[in-house]
Length: 131
Image (cartoon, rainbow, N blue to C red; front, side, top):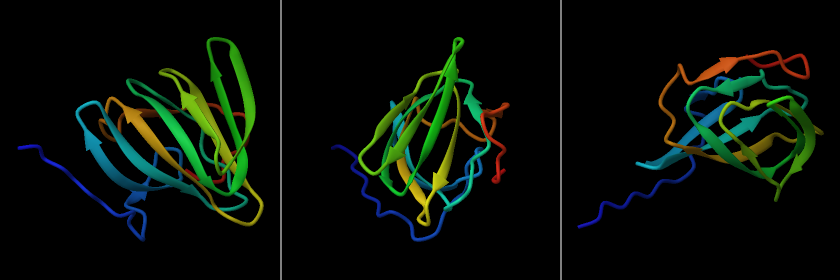
């Protein structure tokens, strides 16, 4: 018999992600895991890179920018509700929330998030306000 899980988004964050954003842990399967991230308005995350995972993020609310850099190429893209981005393995990334609402996204991590040693802080595009 299959093992199904159902979970509602927690009201309060479960903790702080390595980039400084609030994280609400959602569900996981052997191939990936999902979490909700939220950055307060006017704040900038710490820049990080992952050691073994890659991610896909889908933005739910707020406005801001995402900086990504890998293999000598970098870009800054505007993000808001409805925008989906990839963070391939080894990509340095950083994001910031503009306006007066939090920037919120759900992220799928493949393979599942392995733990606190996964992310390494790196030099980013902007000065972080979160750590």
